[in-house]
View 1 (cartoon, rainbow, N blue to C red):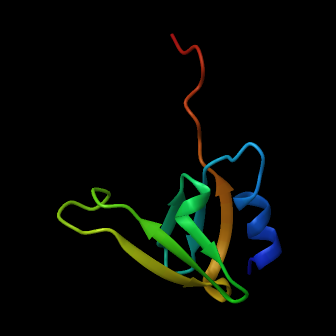
View 2 (cartoon, rainbow, N blue to C red):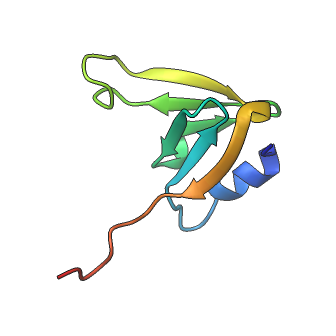
Length: 82
């Protein structure tokens, strides 16, 4: 189980690095900007922009810390790939 302080380390990192939250259900949330997530004591609210799912308007998802399995940095494209 993740905790609010642990997740806040990712959200407030300088410079910010995109990350993914993996849920026990198999669902995951990609956080590409710190304004895409609101962190509370027992849950987070994650913004999903329009266009991520075709035909779906922007939405907010609530996710409980109890159901979070892990948080991991998102891969960034390698600089100078040939």
